[in-house]
Length: 266
Image (cartoon, rainbow, N blue to C red; front, side, top):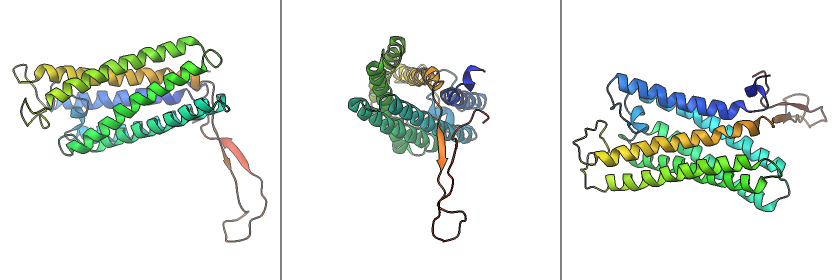
């Protein structure tokens, strides 16, 4: 049996691979059509102009669904491993909410381009990166509280390092983008897709975009730490029939069916 056939380990793997493919394909398309500069454009800039924006939006919407599934499985796993720990239960629920908000933000970013709906796009980015960072922080706290009883210390330290990586990237991006969009470097920055080294704010722009890509990679790294955990879990769905037919009749007892929610044959 291959490693991705064990439990639900294919979920975080598929999430990272699919999202990375969305970034790569839209980047290559945008570069080929000269819609953006090759040197570190904003991730969303590679999905601003047609046709790459269609590919970018469609693939990120699927990525959001994969992310929801991954976050839910992680929630159910922690819930099953620590059913009586009150503080872990509360943190686990908070993590679920933060993760779902981040997924919603990802869908918003995918469907509302920066040049068309700047405010909506920024709100989506704040949800994606902000709530996503908090989700990673909460999961790292859970990893700390669950070690060494549930898993080894190595998992906690790896996730802590990834969270620190994410935090440094987020601080750099927030600081430089605030300065860049303060109004001191012109009012057309929102619509600007091509940058030259002689342009005002070029250095801030490069630092901001580098931090954005770095933060995205930290997200990839964090979800990859779920692979080993997800090899130890599978989910099932139970169908409860209220009658032998679908007519409006009085319910009668029937046998229930319990099947895998996500089978290995999928």
